[in-house]
Image (cartoon, rainbow, N blue to C red; front, side, top):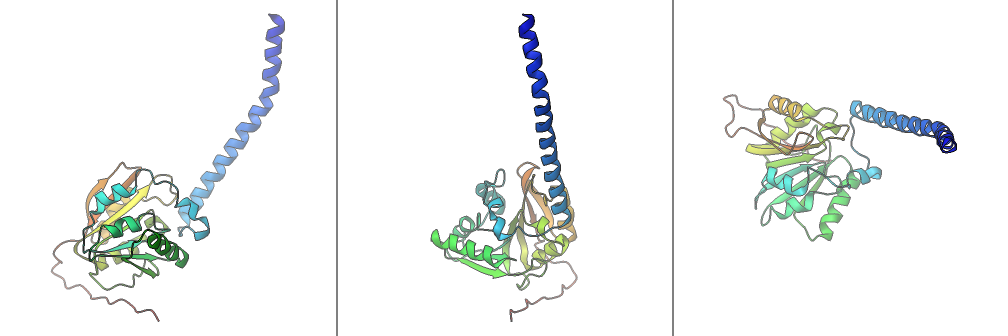
Length: 239
């Protein structure tokens, strides 16, 4: 029995340094991940096309069905998607706008738009209109869309307030805006922050679909314009 105890003690002593090394590696990796997340949060930018595997991963809590429930797309509507990435949601929403409806996909990166259009074409979906540009200055006329949506994108825009003002501008009266956010994304916008920013942009908060850590926020433009006459904006044409 004494020999057995000594043997176990020796084994524990031998494993001690290895366990400490493993713990050190784990803590170092966690610190690096945390540091990277903090850096990305302080430096908002779009996910590069070369790292698209991040946006092609499964979308827990913010899947296609939940987006449909939040957006409620209808046949014949004109809808805007900002930041489609590789088109995870695009074809599904575009199908629900038929017949007669169009989904405009808008992204800052041309490779993302090309990927989205290829994906839609492979699925036989033809009612998509791509356009490249900056979400802080949308190249569309006032009151152009029945609805708009963006998923895990708002936090990547350097000026979120400007992006929401532009989305409010291009929505028709009573137009819907759906914003999807997921915990774990270093650029996640909380429902509380979204509600506050939306109100500053003239968008009323309607509801949250899903839990706080993975949700779609539904906002809407007022059905009746205020007594002040808004300034009319005309989209700049590409040159």
